[in-house]
Image (cartoon, rainbow, N blue to C red; front, side, top):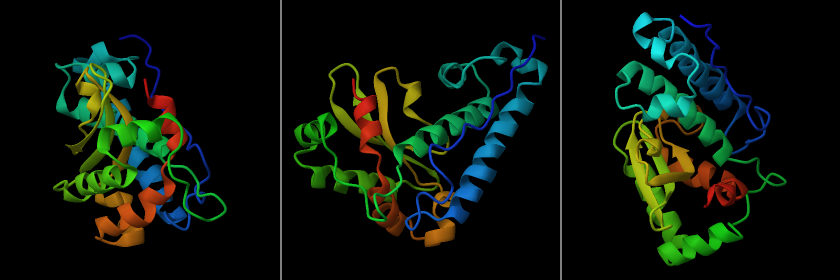
Length: 208
C-alpha cells in the first residue's frame, strides 16, 4: 500500500465564538470539534482497509463522485466535504447584527430565478425545514443553463454526485447543528441563525 496522507480537519474560517449569539461557541465545539472531527477520523480509518486502497490519497471529491465507492467511505467523505462547505456558507455577524442582504451577482440571480429575494428565502426555508430526518438544503447552479435551483438531500448526500449541479450555499439541518441552541426547533434555527449568518460573498464566489 502506498504511503497514506491522512485527511485532516480543516480550520474554521473564523473563531469558535464568532457566530454568537446566533450559533453558540458550545455548538461549534461539538458540531465542528466532535462531529466533523469524527468523520475525518472515520475516513482515515476506512482508508487503512485493503479493500479501499484505490482511494488512498484521493481528494474528497474523487471519493464522493466514484459510483463504486462503499457506503462507509462515501458517507464520511461526503460529510467532511459538506461540513467544510457549510462553515464557508456562514460568516460572523457584522457588529453583532445579522449579515446584510445579498448584493452583487448573487442578488441579481436570485431575483431573476425566484422573482425576489423573499421568494427565494421562503422556498429555501421550506426545503430546510421539511427535509425529513437528517440532511441538507442547497442552493445550486445548473451548469447546463446557469439557473439557480433549490434542492435538499438526505444524510450525507450532496450535489457533487450530479455533474450538472454546482453548490452555491448550504444549510445543515442535522439535529446536531442546532440542538444545543434551539433544541428540536429546526425552524427557529433556520430563521434565527442561518439567515442571519449567510456568507453572500462565498455565494458570489461560487457562481459561474
